[in-house]
Length: 465
Image 1: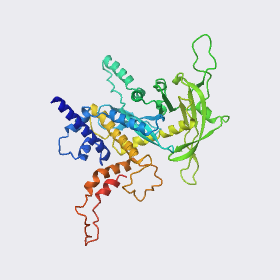
Image 2 (image 1 turned 30 degrees about the horizontal axis):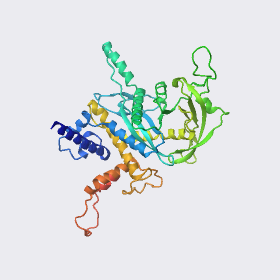
Image 3 (image 1 turned 90 degrees about the horizontal axis):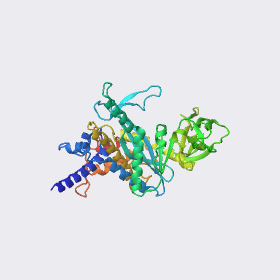
Image 4 (image 1 turned 90 degrees about the vertical axis):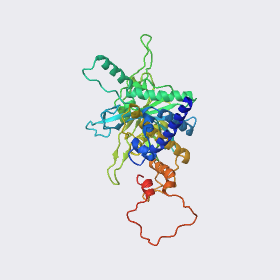
């Protein structure tokens, strides 16, 4: 009887997990747990099992993300490397008693003033699903808590301070990122996937801790400072003394950019759905003391010109300086993959605005970490299912687009398009039930429509488009 009850409990948790994943996607209001329960139509039933699903860790977001990553690797070509973009984000909170929250730097604050907000810090890895023309869709494959422990009081005993310093080392952002990457590499090795892994990072992760502790078969492509101190490879070794790893000092990335004796190369890459010419300079092989004895490739991308309006003065964006731990990687592929990294910012925007990640009002330590991860897993599963159902460039065509949308300019289905299609599939039969007979009803005698009678299907399927 105990075995049967445990099996029933597992089946009940799986069914409730499936319902919560759907509710995370189709919920029209704030994405709190009560809103998810109401979306499922269980607002008049016992809701303790819904809260226990997260509080007692009956849902495992890591398992969901593992299946998403496996599906992505099956969609991509077998010999194609797994391209992962790494970034961290914050989820703003208001309650001071919520676990894993602290004052964090506001990334949306002005550059001339440091703003602090009360928030929870998360780390995300997104995998690339490229199209044939070089465009890409980034899909999350990991979303983990990366918060730091609370600082003890000044009068706390030395044991608490020592434990706090040790926990700070364990919860360092770079260490959390490395642990997540190693976990993915171990899972891929266990399943026999041998394609290399390319990691795309910004300047905050291009540092000593990341470069010197990269897992095997992992290539890092990251931004670097324009005044970084680089070195050439050593030309010879002395008979006495230790082995040399660094040679003469190389020019800084900024000096490479302004050097007139180094010509620009023109390569092509897909940027925002269009093939564009990009001017680059390269220098390799190089050594950087932060990277140890790794051979590096320096890539300098010229500032791209743009116009604010027709007839206005031409402006330029900032130049980009990249290093790559694999100097043999083709230049076109290196630049194209780093351009793909921008799509992880689109993931952050969709997760916070459309799926309300971080809006759940919870205080249980397990729920604080598992609820946002489950919402992001539902977002990832939605996009994987859309690619498998419609193809990369396919779009659901049942709901016609509004008049102001130009279908020719839209490269791919947006997250809101997929959510509206999912709502239609789940709710259309309840909104517009099929007639009981095959005969059509007669036109009413009064032809004037009611002024204040909005269409429910239009409000649901178009209001947030």
